[in-house]
Image (cartoon, rainbow, N blue to C red):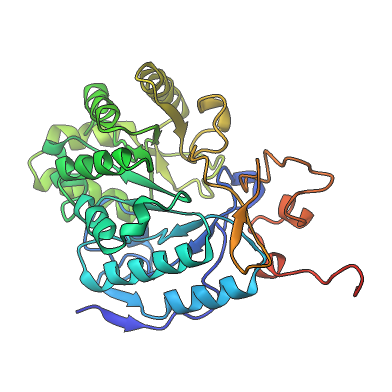
Length: 368
């Protein structure tokens, strides 16, 4: 049984990254659980390495209701990112049911959303639970496949087998759902180019449209856990190679601390050049997550997630939301009209993260 907690404060909130370290568009992050409360037990998980994280199963039982109340209030809504710190479809019935309730709220209001998961059976469960998802055009799926099957026992021991994840990708793609496959973190030393090519080939064959990857970043706790998992599985040579490839370095870009453990810039350049070239050769687009700038992404994609439905939404007189044309909530890099933004919120060009009050209705000019 999962501990039932009450979420305090707003459900809808943005990534905390300020402009100088930011690549992510504005999002409405929807927390389902406390940080680290995930049964997948990925050793390198940043959320499990927070000092305040918890391993015991827990969930915020009031998330769906709070989200509905907030959507009643706001006039502007970025795409929902459902559960940014734990898997929303992890094999815990209480969490999956909560995710379904949140999804039902999103559909009722007509807001765009996406789900990142390592749970193939969870995706198939959700499609059975909410058949309307197959017809709902404003959501997309990101399936993480961070290693081929023989190495997944180390990277995500509690998650779905890779073959099951690919079945879920194929099912969604056949239903016309936009599907992204993420290969991050690609832990070089454990995985190599041939492993990434295996993932890319299978992602393409399953119908994925877009690839996101990164070599990953760790703190001391998550890196120690990763090395311990490798050695416990008998991957001593790989553990030594990972240690050679990842070192603490100077603070740069998204990374706030020089204590962050990551691959050197030259190795990341080589990796992302290889990944983009191979993804595009297979007819997919590519984006690097966080650790590299937009110049490493495929040209022409609206944002790093590439989903065309990942747009800012504005409430209509019906109380439901409609997507704004050519407005992808990526206000740092692309606003259709910076002088007069279609959202009516020029503050979103400057607020990183945005304030909840910015999303609320404005007084009519006649009443102001």
